Length: 233
Image (cartoon, rainbow, N blue to C red; front, side, top):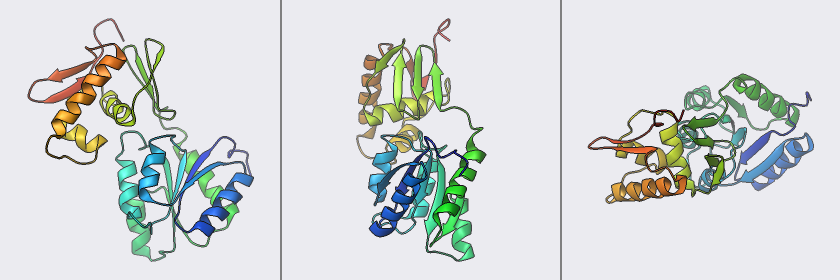
């Protein structure tokens, strides 16, 4: 091992408990920090709590299609830069192509040796190490995607998960107007009757918690945008 595993967070998404145990134990012994879940829903919750460096993603989950979950992660406001390695029994070329085109960094067919898997994790991290640091700053507000923390004027702001994701969606492209439906799809992954009211409530809550009601602007008939006021950054 090169030592690159030190401090690397790996999320194992695998419903085969024996395999998940083996992966978690083997990777932990090699210096990785490992958390594990067995469903797509639990994976979404985990990604919304602590952002891992790499996701090991099984395709045959009981409640989700792994390929669709991979696409969802890649399109996510927060987790788009996470490394993804698919680990699956599906060995046909068309399955590998589909997996890679859905956004996976690598595709491994079971069974896989732990030394090889560790090397593949390190390779994915090397390819992604030049990605921009996941910290967004607009005016006096700083948002860290990896730790899911927000500072406003240097003070920590406690946000609910949806509030954090909504703020991140706006701060990724400061000055750009985002429609209400775009934000709903980005943060809630769906639009439903009454959804615009839910969005308005979350925007109002953000304005209050950030103590900067002018940071998130309402653009009448278009949506919302985040932009610093002159002289604030």
